[in-house]
Every structure is written in C-alpha cells, then in structure tokens.
Length: 512
Image 1: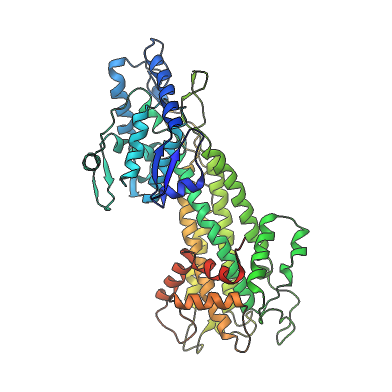
Image 2: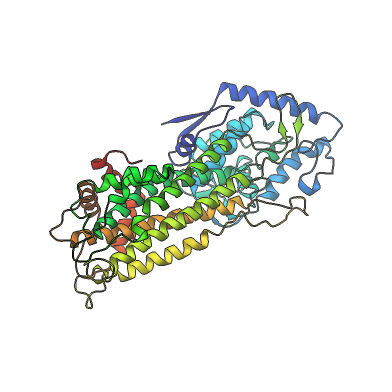
C-alpha cells in the first residue's frame, strides 16, 4: 500500500487524495517528530510560568480572560473538545473526514502547534487503522477553523464519541481504538485547541473538488464537441489562431480539446446545406470561452490550495524564535472565496450544456433531427423529460452558486464577529460537482443519440469511440420510448468514473 510521509513543510494535493480516497498509510518523518518535540518544550516552559498564555493557561474565545490553574488544564483541554463536538445533521462522507484528519495532522507536524509527538502518532494510527470519526454536516462557520468537525475527530483520539470502523460499522470510538491496539490520548496544555483550529475540512473538500472538476471539464469539452457534431455545426471557430488572439489559457485548452475530438468528422461544416446559417448559436460557438473561463478559475483555486497546503494554521502558534503568538490565520476567507468562485463556474458550465441539449431536442433549431429525438414523435416523447431533469439540476446549481462567503453570523459573544462560512461553501460545491456530472450525462445521452440519427454521415473517430464505449457501458441508443432512468444512470456512471474521457483519449491522446 502507498505510504505518505508527513514532514514539516506541508503536503501535496496528491498526498491528500491518496489518504482520503486511496486509503494510503501515513508516517511521520524524523524531521517532523523532532519539530514536534522542540515546539512542545516551548509550550511546557510557558505552562510552568505564572503569566497567562492564551491557549496554554487561559480559557478560549470570549472566555480567554480567565487564567486556568495547572490542576485544571487537562480538564480544560478535554472540555474544549467535548463542548465543541456539537455538530448536527447527516454524517459527512468518509473521504471528507479522512482529508480533514490528515490535513490537521499536516499542520500539527509543522512544529508550530506545540502538540506532543505521541498525539500526532495517534492521529496517524487512527488513519492507518481505517477508523473514521462520525462528523456531522452542520457545525462549522469556517472561522477559528472548522471547529465542530475537527472536534468530533479529536473526540475519537480521546476514545470518546462514535466512529466508523474499517468494516463500515459505527461503534463507540473507545472500542475501536482498543480493538486496533491504539491507546486513547490524554490531552495536555494547548493540545485540545491545536486539534480544532484549522481550515482542514474546507481545504480537503476544495482539493477533492478540483480533482473531480479536472475530469469533468474535459468531459464537458467532449460532450460539447458531440453536440456540435449532432447539430451539424462548424469546427472553424475552434481554430488555434482564433484563440491565440484572446490568450486565456483555459479557453485555448478547451478549444484544442474540442478540435481533437472532432478531427475527421463527416458531420461538421454543413452550414449551407438544407438549413443554411451564418453562425452557430452561442451555446455551441462559445463553448470554449465558457469552459475555458472555468478552467482558469480552477487554476486560481489550485494556487490558493497549494498555499494553504504549505501553511500551518493554528492559534496561537509556536514561532521559530520561541514566541507563542495569537493570530488570525484560521480565518477561512482565502479558501471560502475560491470554493464559491468554483460553484459559479460549475453552474455556468452546466447551464451552457443544458442549452445545447435543449437545442438538440427542438425540431425548429436542431437542423433536421426528429422532435425530442423521439422514435415516433407523438406516440413517443423521446428525451423530453430528460431535459426537464437536466433543467431542474441547472436551476439548483444556480441556487448553489450564491456565495456562502458573503454571509457572516457573529458568534462567541461577539469575539468571533466575522466568520468565513467556508465549510458551507465547500459543502455546496460538493453538491454542485455532483449535479454537474448528471447534467453532462444528459448531454452525452442526447448527443450520442442525435449523432446516430444522422444517417449517412460519419462522426469523428473519437466520437464513434465514445458512442461505442457508452453503449458497452449500458448507455442505450435510439429507439422507442422505454424506462429512461436506468439509461440516464448508466450515462451518469460513465461520466463520473472517467470512462468518457478515457474512451476519447484512446483516439485523441491526452486531453488538456
């Protein structure tokens, strides 16, 4: 099994995906263990002094003015975890929790948190045992970190609360730790706070969304190319020289992908046939501009993610010169903004895909295709309601594009009077990515059927490869009306697992 070694300088997006989705093992580097020990010595020295230090010998948030005596500090650390583990609602996905735990471990290993090496090792042991704390949908405001979600993870380290074992069964966390030979931790000064104070949940979801969108944007280029073919459109608008004079890199990449898919098509360039037209509609002609803008948005989001992956987010932090200083680095605004920005791009990509689908089904705009791509229009309804479903998904995506980060609800008796709502931005982006997959699946379903209905005209080799692969995957072609939901589910699975892109690339080579 692949092993990810965590050092002091952060981790990569690939590391996060390996642990969250691939079940990779986690090890602490020698450098990290040394940094953990050195920072802990600083915290222990401060804890022994009579002067109060936030997070070490004081309360938290609005209660930070109280100095806590030494005999109460272990209780203080336990209590912050217990009281902050206040999430409600459905459980979040296992991959999200694993990303959350791993990214918190990444910051702990930076040597800036003051957590003991044995606590960090326990975090790694829990991940390696396949134990997943029960974390709930609601509870984070994305400021002072993802407090409630991280608290539920810290609770598991203490042997309290519930967690899911590697067998998928939820049991008391103490039982699971014991079954895997892991000793519950007894938290000491600052450790409870250090386990809760990070942007790890929203960052983990950003990294996974970017990985999914990388495939989906390539998928969107393929479905747009298929729709262009089915509508007898022109590929001249995809010429590299046209995109070079507006040098947005994402636009050029999308146009190149579409051109690669359409190479050798017998369906393109029929503008002056039976239904002459000067230009294709915007949803066809401007596909690279819209998908390209989304690609450029992803590039910016990756830059933010890379910076956050290299960060040590905690409050207070242990600095290299031995100071322990309060700060505001836990504020989730940088991550929240790009999560919301991506949701806008996703909604627009889905919207233009739906417009192409609708055009394929409208006999007045489809340039010779039967109404709704039906076998016997009137007796058969064809894909009429498939487009309704697609439209409903797009409508929801527009609602999900409303930014969460524009909102703020003060908390902690007005001490935390401006929050990022980054966790909410991440949760809605996950839903948006899921819906985009379905929208593209409907376009794929309609476009492949429409191409097959263009008798006597041969599609591009890449398009034919997609059609063949889709049919082999249970995405059935034209014919009389039938129970449509299974066909759409098969198309969804075909896009979701990356088979659409894989089938295309067998002909085109790697897409951009």
